[in-house]
Image (tube, rainbow, N blue to C red):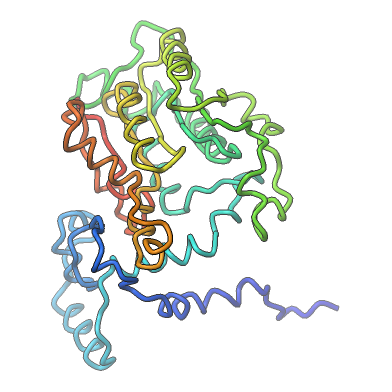
Length: 352
């Protein structure tokens, strides 16, 4: 007989998360290194968050009674407050070093997008209603399937013709992008590129990861076969880029979003930004993923092993500082409101 009070073992781990985070060194040697900042350093205090323009529209001012209660609790606890960036960085290190991304699934398919950014991207897709997503870095296809699922849901229950975006285009609002008045809107698709075949096991084979949980092959999924167009090749290859451009032109896509998620070293991402920025439609995003690796790989331990390393974050800064096309984009920090993001400074909104 099974006890009604039996608790799954994984649930016992939840209370340990704060303890495990506290064991990670908050500084991790980053003060002595050239680290990109996350955001301006504010203490993790509720009332000071309200002072930041990013939070004020979301949660409003704290009442005097709430503020006094907060101060009293802090004084009684006798504990100092940590910078929230350090807490986020520590969790990021915990997430990466334990390879939690290798355990994640979407509809049974290995999907490595961290939950915070997956949620934000879901909001972006709804807000912007792209017709085509160009993704570099397919891997096992879980990300492409995730995007396809969301576009399918939106198309089914909230069709373009009834959307706020269609109305904005009709009224000619600034930043609304292009619509399809007088013409047929193409069927939403995901165009995804990877140098390896989709059934390549890769990270799924990590011990304790998705492969050991009997993850399915994405090519067996009906929705993937219906909405995803895979291209095998390097995203930096001109022939691959020509295939993508021809696909967009021949099918009449006018609302294109680009997600860069292949190799994360600075030279490769710089080349991708130079090659793909103009595919991004006005009002859509160019999302550069895994900018967090620049900071994560600059701990004293990692630098000692690998030397100084620059990745996607450095490529974004180089693009914004030196590329003529940077005037077309703005870093949208509003998309980092959940605080933990692996793509900080990577949500680039095309505004012109």
